[in-house]
Image 1: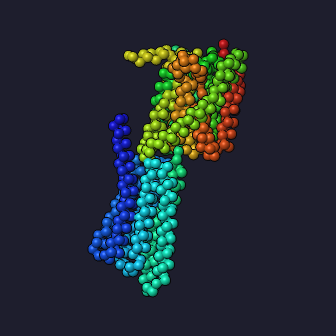
Image 2: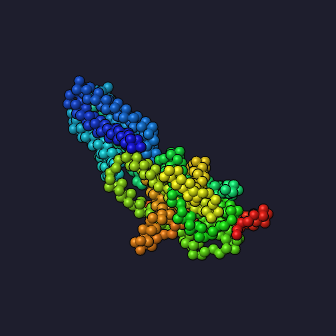
Image 3: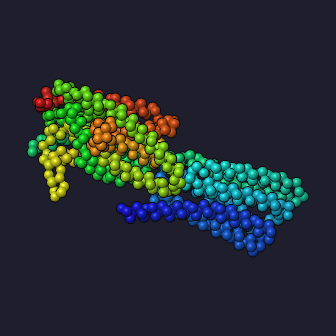
Length: 219
Length: 349
């Protein structure tokens, strides 16, 4: 009986670690994405960018593996029956954020967009905000598992930063269409800006659901 | 031994089966309903601990029931238990929440009325008062536990998965305690009517000794176990969700509150301790497990603001509480008349 109990807690501990690692991946992905864009702006689509892009891909791949592991273990071990569906939903939504980060980084890798110098600083600012948004989402989601009283605080930060990204991306696109750049270039850059801001939008959607799950998590 | 006793005891076994199907389901109902404990696990634990409680601690509550009406003819015992069992069965079938304790009390009063024996009003009022105290005490326990557990969870920063494991083990341990308390408290309902006419002799194997009453209680608890295994699954699945949707932690609080309530109404040790300390003690009376569960659920519902409780269903439950003793009493009275006048059996001395 004692052995059984220890082994049950050991399994739970292993899953706890996987959930923590999954949250680490969100932070890793967003930080690496920021670094990738910085590299692209400074050095162009060279070898260094390729390497950083590959790192984003690997993080996305590892996160997918962790997600599947978490989902399987939750079902196989019949854990948290009342909140299992919510946790699965949450993990899926968080994974969407990582997927979007990977998708945007890959677009830079494929399309090699030409970005005029005057957009470097606003673009880096936008990436900084998106990264900040993802980090706060990761902390809010981690708190859902450990300390629900913190979820609201970090969710509020996500909402605030997401609004900021909307403003930044809006201003950037407005300025962009007031320049003399060829239309194709304008459209390509506008689309990329929108895609980067979409990462924060997905984080916001994820936070909306997280707050509902938190209400249900309260006993 | 007079083998006709085995026939007469069958009504008690029927009542035991009903108790297993209905009341014992309440112990693990919330745990099984929230899918935290498998039905098989719940049924095994409930059966083992109900038996232990009945055999080792069933005497206290049984004595109070004997004081209400000492049924002194085996045919009378048969019909009293049968009337109670039939009432429980009908009520369960018609979807009304029912208390085995109330059914047997109603049936005993029916026997008292038929046999012309006086009903001890002091004992009766003691028992009836527990029909109010039992859910009220259980509700108070639940409210206190709810705030305590909520506070503990908030300040412990326990991981969701770890909390889930603790809740699971808590539900099993508390369920075992609840089943023990149910056996101790409710075996009187099942076999109490047969204690005075019990022909069983005690026996001992090495250090293991059982007296005649304990053998009777052992047989009764086996009937309860059969009820648990054969008919309680559906009740267990619905008991948790009937009044209010609940989380596994709340399910655990409900089990703990009802177990504590059953325990304080059946523990001779606790009664002696309170008496020694010159504190008011509660009577050792068979109380209703269903009432304890409902009291606990309502307590938590109130602690959460009262919005989640389905008050309409509560009215239906209250109707069951009022009608159970009345139906059992009338049924017992009428059946005794037939048994005595049609079958020429002695139903009282």
